[in-house]
Image 1 (cartoon, rainbow, N blue to C red):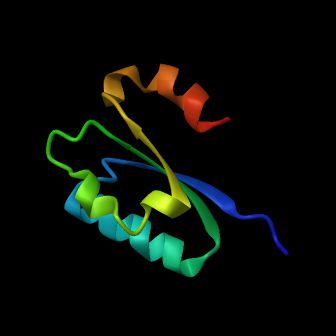
Image 2: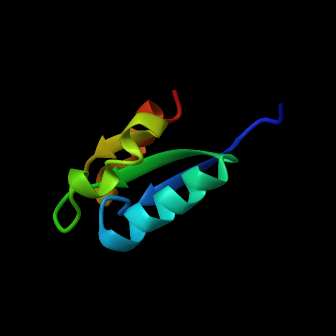
Length: 72
């Protein structure tokens, strides 16, 4: 079994980000992390991804603190 690549999708709860997350998860080659402030996006858009990825809500301007959580 090969090791999965890791991808961070910023804005992953918005329409395009959620579609990208689903597409990449369907490939089954990537470990997905989604970062979104939910200003435009919605957790509902991530229904498919929730059990197969890591999600973090926050502001991109403060992503440095959150990356520590996503990398663990």
